[in-house]
Length: 247
Image 1 (spheres, rainbow, N blue to C red):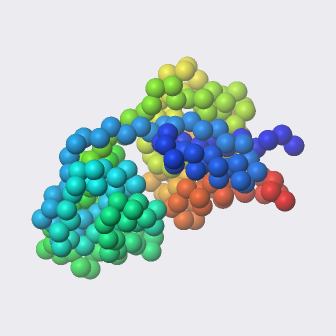
Image 2 (cartoon, helix red, strand yellow; image 1 turned 90 degrees about the vertical axis):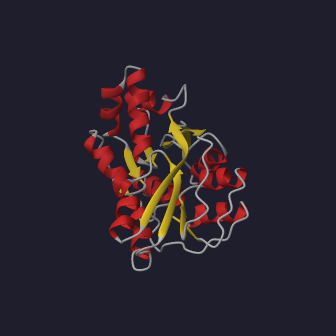
């Protein structure tokens, strides 16, 4: 049996290195193809909010660089990885939802944010679910865009591999990684063949919004991770691609 090749689209920092290490530890061959690069805006969250929501490790690092002071605000995060990053940046974490998604955080907060000022600090591609859900719960919501997510130059090796029928699996971690994968494929002139090639691969996504984006763009999705973390996504995608591969 040939090596199981698995595309991963994490930003080109320790997250990509960790992803490569994880895929390798599962006995598969990682195909690292960064689809996200960070462009900071220089903005900082408001300091007069009752609740502040941080949604990523990058956001935690940027607010720390800006010497942001949360004051008496209740600090909320989307999931445990972001929580760890926020703590490492020197801030306390007050709320982590049981379900690591925007809708999960809304469900956790909706009974207590009526009339409260809620600051959401994140990228320019954040899901509207969070803002709309909190506003519907009666909160006064303000969003600060900390950084923009762009497609790195040179991305697209995974698209070429898919087009050639040489990719066994792919782990999409956001709707934007789907969009950027298709942009990279188009830039290399292999968009249609890459999408066709993914039909023969196992495609895993990190959550329902990512599944919806992929499906709308013609990509067949085989699984949605049971927990919205890269570790779970990678493990379940490798297992689905070759159930006995690690035996």
